[in-house]
Length: 156
Image (tube, rainbow, N blue to C red; front, side):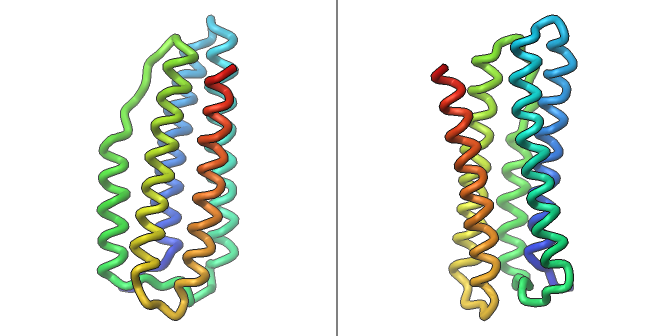
């Protein structure tokens, strides 16, 4: 079976969906804390934006055979994603600071995951890796901007 960058994107979407669930739970539980509720919803909205962005990439690549990954690379990438998923923990908090710090850590680790995937793909001599690397580079930029935004929010 051939794996493509779409398979990787599906796994990344699952990560974003897990984050949405965490922030939804916090938002629901923060009904008595409007500021925490708002912050959780802002984070939730950003994760949904990532999902939409990843879905657009997938639909653009759906019939593109140039995004095939070799089994060894896909196995390494899958292992990185599995390890990332193991570290995701639910968060129950009433503190905006704790929520933002959690979000910052998770986003920084997510950037690291994407950079590791980029490295795994970049170390291969694919004829098609330029497309895959461009996609990953844009994903990294999006996530780094999210990290920056959270960092600004923490300083306020």
